[in-house]
Image 1 (cartoon, helix red, strand yellow):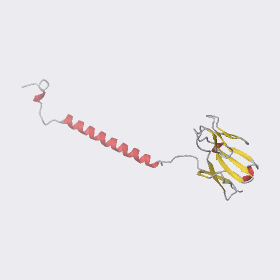
Image 2 (cartoon, helix red, strand yellow; image 1 turned 45 degrees about the horizontal axis):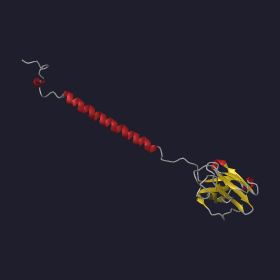
Image 3 (cartoon, one colour; image 1 turned 135 degrees about the vertical axis):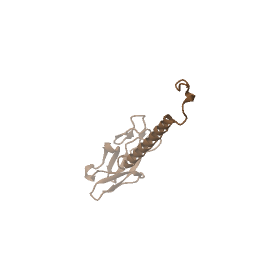
Image 4 (spheres, helix red, strand yellow; image 1 turned 180 degrees about the vertical axis):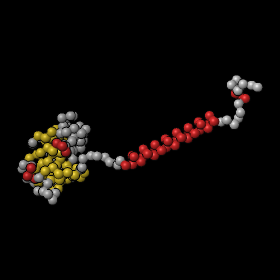
Length: 163
């Protein structure tokens, strides 16, 4: 009789235990991977897809907080609030060129320290590289008597809020 270790063709054909074990391992791995993927998707669905950013409509203070004929920088919101005899208005403190904070000088307007753009007192471009004026935002008065700025709504240069 021949030794099966020397002649692999002499092994009986019905013993596919190695092949069965391999197929079972691959199947089990696939099931476990699918279950983990399903659990991952389920866990992800519990966390909402929300962009946490500051609200676009917010209070900036009471009218009495802004002295008459003044320009006040609201630095945390990157805007200037003007209190003029005609009323209140708000102008963005963000340069329309590349987003730097502009500085304000009374009577001279706005100047961007990054690239040298200058703007008129009403936000119009005096000298580039900025091509667009500083946006002016809508303002309203809340029921509690606070000035509300809405940065999602821009207004024209004639807008004034009487408060």
